[in-house]
Image (cartoon, rainbow, N blue to C red):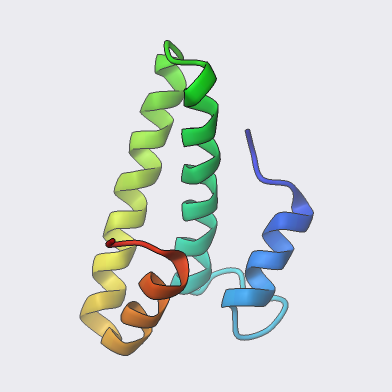
Length: 89
């Protein structure tokens, strides 16, 4: 259920400022979104996996706090990121 190294590198290239920019808020949100989407696909077949559901809720809460931080500090980056990721439909 974890993202592969290649997928994470692609996310960092897409959303980061350079290839080694793994700590910026945008990259962290994009990685969490990919992990959340993968867990949601997992739950389509494994409905009763309650331990992973707890992990999903933790990831959603972490992404929510990072989004709030980005919205507070850089509104333009927040708006462009949610448009790219398809959040807030």
